[in-house]
Length: 247
Image 1 (cartoon, one colour):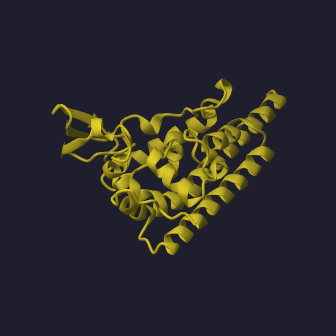
Image 2: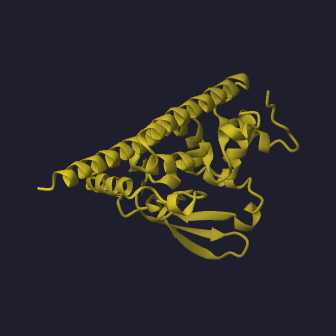
Image 3: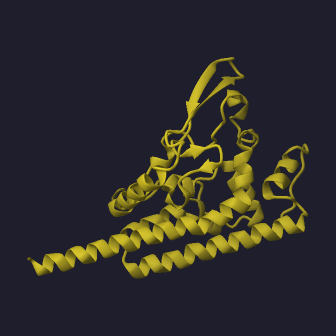
């Protein structure tokens, strides 16, 4: 037996395990934030996207099934890290391998593992069209839990980001750029390719940012006696010319 190769293989396996654990921890850290502050937006996806400039041209009426919002077919299987250099533009192979292995075990008991379909009528031309859910999408939510893909964890639509920027008094350095909410893609790139010390420091930083934003969100909701961020900002959009209070 080549002992040196065995030691090196063990080190590689340990590093791969560390990277997956960090990725899973990032997913778990985001879960309560999304549940408390973002899920109401997702449950009302069409009302939220109606705030987009292009909304009038793309307004639809659902005639069958459930509109899945961002959770369209293939979304959960996208492992790209948008905006990162080409050598870091995808999750580390060892993280992807572990995600896929654990997904197979979980989805063996997930009846809706093939997703589903919905039909809709586009108002601007009356066309009847169909779409497909992400294969992990079900009536009671996503079946992946902490095994979500990068896009599932990173993406928030422009109206949500706009609201969070108001909650955070315009702090771009906290919210992150439009393609990188809370700098999650950047954090995933560090988790995938950097040394353990950098990974640990990144995890501390991203968890701190999640907690900071959560505190700002709760303070904003309390200050305005709102049910949720979604409820508050949706109410503001229904008042013509209203400007939400920020401070």
